[in-house]
Amino acid sequence: MRIERPGPVGQRQWTPLTATNAGLAFGLELAMLAALCYWGFKTGSSLGTRLLLGIGAPALAAAAWGLFLAAGGPRFRQPLAVEIVLKLLVLGVAALALHATGRTTLAAVYGALVVVSVAVEYTAN
Image 1 (cartoon, rainbow, N blue to C red):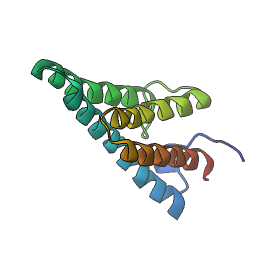
Image 2 (image 1 turned 180 degrees about the vertical axis):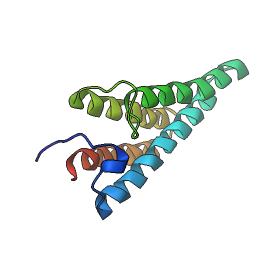
Image 3 (image 1 turned 120 degrees about the vertical axis):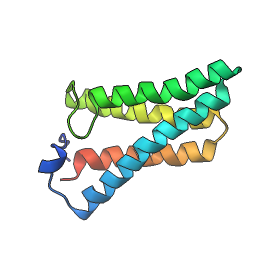
């Protein structure tokens, strides 16, 4: 099995598998933001803390995603191994956030989908 970096969205070879995975990946990115927002509002002890965590955590994740992992071309390209690890870490934080709020089944399903999606993204041609 050969691991390759997916090319720019407009230059990719689209198959039914890669198109489906692109939709799944986008859904997982949106779910990551929602999970972090949910975690922030559930975790904070005061209104100020809940607002800070509920808005700040997704904003921080979105900033990291845009700088290092954006599908249209990140601002700062990383080596392939670093890119894969960063993607798993950033998306994986959402699974941890879901688990921390007591949504363990949802966290497990989300985490499994993240691993499958990242594996397909970097191995399917």
